[in-house]
Length: 326
Image: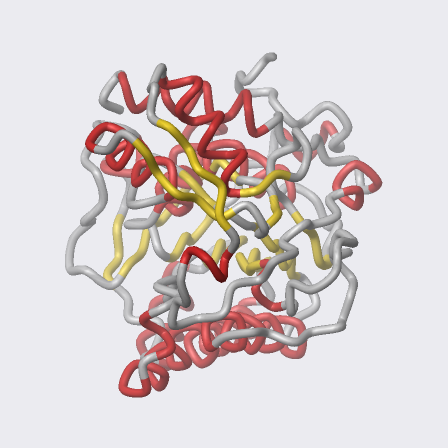
């Protein structure tokens, strides 16, 4: 499969390809923000990176993100957000910054901070972008739904019933964007993995290396999302005016965490035994998890966007990246 600079552009208006835009990306110390910055550099767009730390604090892999302009910004500070964005004057803001520690978000002493970041912080971004009349891409999650049933969730479904604080605050972030702006893409993703940060694959590789057997839940169903592939899609979107709600995970079919682990170990050459268990058997976590994380991605192709490659293909490329120390 071709993954070069023209990936995902086949059906997109050719005129958009040549237009250089200025992007402001929040949360660049995370998995997705890191890859978005690198994708911008590949396409010749101007990118300004942002996160809370005084200097870039993600992996220093020598890639573009470590060489592009960086601005320290606290999204919970409305004044700082407005000042920074009005100064940078981006054409597009890709808002990746979020509180993503799902279980920790349930702690009573953390909930105010989680809401300050995911809901109020996003409102601050939306308010500044309204003044700039710029495009916004907001990264959301399958956790805005209740995860019941077996039908894939459609992007324009408004049957929101978040099961936990993380899902509720991400929904509040969605509403901040949709009720304030018109030029927005709200993109829901699930089961994210990338080079820059912790994720399920890295955890399983570590556990599988040190244990003969692992127990993994087999009753939570969804699809993984490789941030490298997602970053390409997000920039494809930014180069259009096809605004609205989208779902974006890798193709390759819906699976359980058990299925995912089996394939991780198979591709990595591990002999570790994987035992399937129910969520109840595995043990109660602080935050309730959705059983049904199936996201309907058909709207992507309907709007001329190239779907992401299969998760099996993404996993193979990711394991190769990890092995190469990237």
